[in-house]
Length: 437
Image (tube, rainbow, N blue to C red):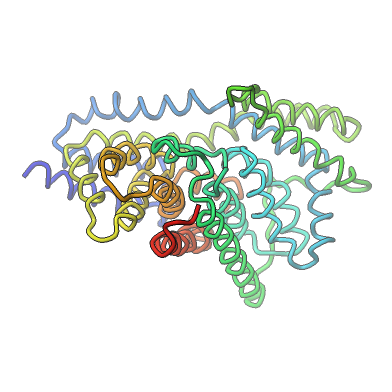
């Protein structure tokens, strides 16, 4: 009975989390309320669970990734201050005319596929997106969706992508990153096409309704006068991507991501040093500290909640239920992965939990494809991981100066519904054409 009460508590906690986030309640307060519901319903010690389970998950993530967030924030800021971001934005706008906004998810996706983490790619391309949206007078509330769609959907789950969402299931089942190549790329390209079309329709309808771009007090003004050439402006991002992907003979990264980001920052300053005002640059460095802290705080808050849920009596029952959904085994794989990713508010978090469980179940079975399982898991993880409590969603919305009320529905359409459709397509294709590589 205690287990079932705990299960009901988890469901109530999860619903409360989403409801309060959509109502605009402070993230930390929301998570604390949801955590208390789960703790009390699980008959656990409140003080011990919060100080040990919650804070351990919170602190571990902060310790591991704060420097990455700081360097990523500073890279985006230096590109904005130098005029490099505006230069790229104007070049893209000139090439794609009124469709320049479609270059935002595409550019972000290319950076992600090159190995840059989703959050960092959002930081790096935000100033470019800001300039493009301003240049084309596109409603600002759609900016988080454009950025998030490019970083957290089609690129991170494509075959070969060096992202944790691709690495966890492929390594877990002993297959390479290119597993399920044909179906994987079909699903990834379909995701890009559907999302891009949907984004175009959103922008068209918003403009038709009279919506315009609105500036924020902390937006940097566009650089007046001459700008650096687009070629020079691309170099810092190119240096960062190349540095991150340099590997030794064992396939291990040579340069840590923090160093790679610092190389991008240094390249920006060296190539465009005459365009920086020393006082302005110093202020940018100082401001990057709290900006990075706020961004990572959002994610740590959700990670801590996931740690609390993992400690509840009903968690094992919940996991067991989602992995034994009847029907084609790939249906159970996709639904189970999506649900756990949604529950954790993180694709990698959900995959980290479900991958070893799925391997224990399917590892001894005959007639199952490890490549298909790994690819379906990767694709499915990119859907419900984008619910309102997701740390990446909160970071994207906060970075753009928007709220869940104004910006979340577009994110839901592009990054929950679209990946869910493509997950179903992947399951169907693997079922109809099991011999495809």
